Image (tube, rainbow, N blue to C red; front, side, top):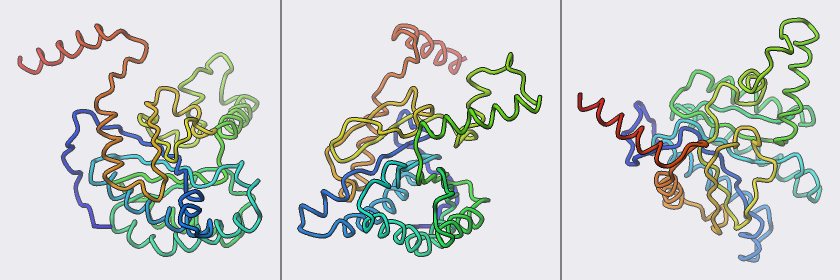
Length: 261
């Protein structure tokens, strides 16, 4: 990971401010090569390293990846144990590079079930990178979109009970302040690798207006070129947010006219 000191000029007409990725296909990648699933997960860590670099070089400011869902505890105990150990070792290995590259790390999800060693690793990584601003990297671990919304509702209810929030003032913007990643923009581009076409309980609220990009490429094979394909696809999309295409064209023409003036 190279040290980035200033944001690069984007090669895309429209660039997503926030990209979310479901990194799917590690196990199938390993199976195709007659390797244990653990080998696929290790290869997946390497793929994430290159995607972080590609996102930084493209000018993306926020990247959120799904590393371990709340449903993944249903996997074989041995595989879960390997994943937990891999999280600890990967953080230790790549933290110096991430810190030097200006990446701010954040881990979202329910940490209450993690080991003391893993919990300490997460806190250390967040503390070491908290002042970085080049790229916000959010890693979802033991996370679920429904869990996120329920936790937000619980915390808002506490504020209602304390009197700091009036029920009459509750609306979408206020509610979103209680969610994970409340300080970051909504997800513009949602990417899922591995051929599945679902969002799997990931950032449900934050992805309400995301463009959904699905690819058959298995995660360990999802390289920088594949990421740039997704960004190019996003750049070609017309995001209407309930408006008509004609309205968007009129707004664009108005902006262009004002720029000329």
